[in-house]
Image: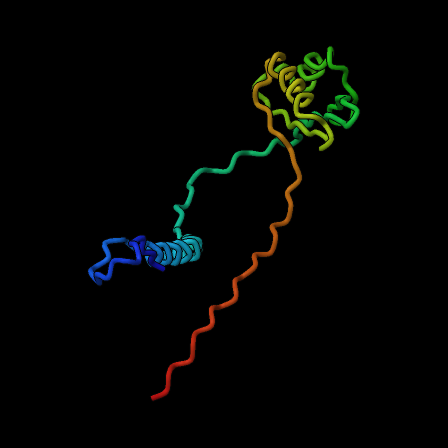
Length: 157
């Protein structure tokens, strides 16, 4: 809606040089809504053909060495409790002093991150640098398939 600021005593019916920006704002808002709706739709279901890996799977140890951090922060190697000060000696006895053997580290989910890092630092200071964190694998959630888009019926002549 345009507004004229001319005085009422002037009877000239000339052209108004004011710019009415209301239609421009309406067009910009409509374009904004179109792009907001169209942008997420353009990034869904991107088909990708991934290359096949030719790497050989690594051998699994016949008897993996599990170090467990329980919820009360006690260490258990296999089935035997281990004191933190005697961890290096227990690891050396179990691995035959092979420092390149992989240690599978398990922790209760209530163990704080800092406490788990403290145990990892103990392993590193003992010379065991190959540490694998163990967790449970959850089943993948069933993928919800989007409903097919309905098309408008063709206009009849």
